[in-house]
Image 1 (cartoon, each protein chain N blue to C red):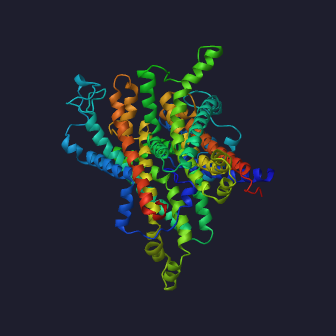
Image 2: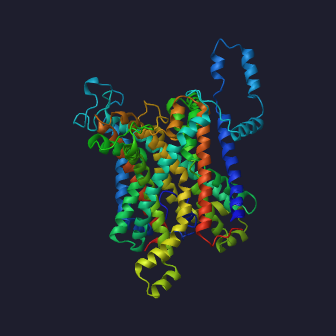
Image 3: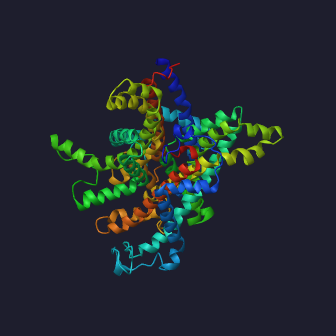
Length: 309
Length: 319
């Protein structure tokens, strides 16, 4: 199947409606994917690192020290310092919190919108389905990064006034990334709904007088959830890359919020004298994204019994 | 074929209109006023400002403004760059060939890697080669282009000093040397973008070959006593690569996104770096036009992929 790019025809024709596997079965199948299990550990370490790292390494992120500019890793500064002598480990802990939060929040936005659009399209038997699918295809053919940049370019100042500096940029980046990445989930959900709604157990529920809302939330959605979980996992890594890309281009978070992408942006002009400055945040992004992608792959194997050899 | 072409063109138009509508709505909803500078300038009296607003129709209803903007875009009247002091369409036309060259070469590189690797991985599924290729593919599309770009600069420009890391449109050399310099400076941007795409294409090719390899006609071909190589190349690969065209087309928006990043890292003078610089300089006409050009390019290449698909696969009817 098509890796992180879920908008592929093969993803849409995904095997439908695996009978809900029991938790233990799922775990057993997941465990068989060794890299996925290692990835869970790596991701756990990274998440714990940014969550409690601030307690273990209580160094201010904006502690300027001109006597320690652009230094490589040492005992005093395990990840070295930047051009103002600020401690990079502390900055990475603080920035990682934001990078990961953006990833998960944008995934939530994309998944909620995608499930809603997909469910409405999948349940509709008249003009709503083609209209929504046309919209989905339209969004799929939008050039995402330019549009993302455009929206941020145009709305940055207004949101800063409303939500404050940090909050405004956070809300905007989450909403925009989520709002431009719901299409794969929507297509997936619709494909699942189209086949599930014709199944006998749905007919049985309907014959007992179940309304559309009850059918969707209690019968169809629980059976369609497997592929959605896989897609949502991949969305997290895509959103983290999107946020880092924005910050790397200098159009994401402001300089005083050192997300991993922003650290790379600041580091790129000092590559010759301070390569560590770019290598640590870059490696952090890479490890996070890689482990999330492997977890998604493992979940795909685990949640769909028919794909396991 | 002609009717098919026409039909695909007619399908592309609504999506272009839809995209332009989205872009225009975003612009219209944005808080900034294009005459903001005039408002804060004490030398411009309020009557003049009102007259200017009237002249440019800024107080008209949204739909009227959209239609006027669309007509202007279609006439090639794309506005005037505040920062560069030349017409936007000239600016974009200067930059476009570089972007297309970098993106095009990187796609060729990506396919040159992905097709053989994907086929080899799929004909021996779960072999060591397959597992290594699969892991590398995962690493490939988990490495963001901006990080690979920095790693390449660090390795090839700073440590080894083999390649230049600033792309120059006008190389001061003649003859063969000129071509060589161009190739040398294009290697890193093309490789960064190419490797990233190759990773996902490899997985597409592999999945597609695996799907085709278990079809009955392949068994028939083997039963006839054809060699493995002939079956793989002439029977499996030819059919398996057709759906890959569609998957590649779906990646086009991502490809242009990657192009923006690589152009910015290596300072390639294409439309991607133009977009970023225009944003940093608050040059709204250029920002809008470049975004629209990216949208048009995506629609155009989707159209090309559709036509290619119809041409490659005779089972698609041209009705």
